[in-house]
Image (cartoon, rainbow, N blue to C red; front, top):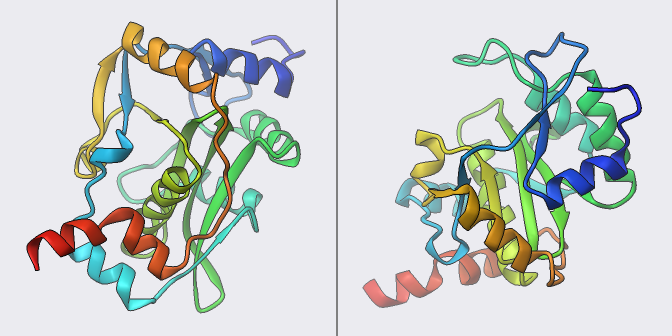
Length: 219
């Protein structure tokens, strides 16, 4: 990738279904990616496992929005069990920090006893949210962040949650894989609408947006 890449160019790329990645954390270069199959999480089909519902009700974690964007990116870029390396290098980090300062990139932070233990970050454009990466330093922290993201999106009239790729972890929550053409159709529609990214969502709102209806139906 040329040295003149800018945050503005990154936004234009996302509008065409293209996003940047690096081969490794220590690599200095970045390349463009446009998957032929795209991972998306339909908001109306978001599934919260029973054990995670219990975790959310325990109030073990404190969740914030846009309070430590750089800390979340650093968490996503660090090595972890089963993930010795990541695709987030210094170049990508600098670009997304700039986009955060422009109020386009957002983070969800999960805290325990004052320590950042998990979170996720991504871009909000129109009514689409492009999920970039998530991390956990303790059990379920990234899952809690994902639940809050979906609640924020549903409350804020978002229509498309792009996960880029599909993983077994994301499948548990309802993520599906669609063709590039179907994705571009959904993306085009999402970019014509305006979502509002505001949070965090309190416990009552979280339950109402994510699973209170299912509880009522089965109670």
